[in-house]
Image (cartoon, rainbow, N blue to C red; front, side, top):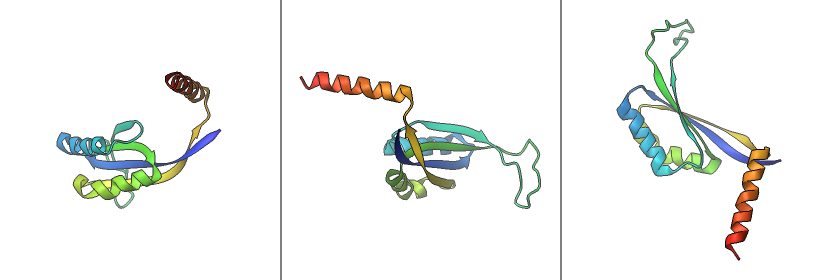
Amino acid sequence: MKTLDVAMVRIYIPNDEAHLERVLAAIDDFGPGGDVNIFEVRPALDADGKRLPSTEKKSLMVEFFEETCRAQMFVDAFHEDLMPCRLLGWTMLMLEGDSYTQSQEQRFKQAEAGSND
C-alpha cells in the first residue's frame, strides 16, 4: 500500500458570504490538489468551559488536504488575506491502496501507454 504525506488545512471563519468568497478565491488561486469541504459549526463551550446554548452564532469551517510543503506555502501566502480567521493544520499519511485507486491508476497507465504509441 502506498502512502503520501499530506497536511489537513482547516480555516475557521465568520459565517458571512463575503468572507467565505474571499477564502474560496484564495484556495482557487492556490489550486489545491483535492476536495475542498465547507462545514457550518457552532461552539459548544465558552472560554470558561461552560456549555453554550444551541442558539449560539454559527461559523464556517473550510477544509482541504494538500501536500505538506504546499499547505505551508498556502498559509504563508494567504494568511493575512483571510483574516479574521483561525488556521489549523496537521500532517498525516494518506493511504493509496484501495481497489478503486488501483483500478484508476491502471486505467491512467493504459491510457498513457496508448498515447505514447
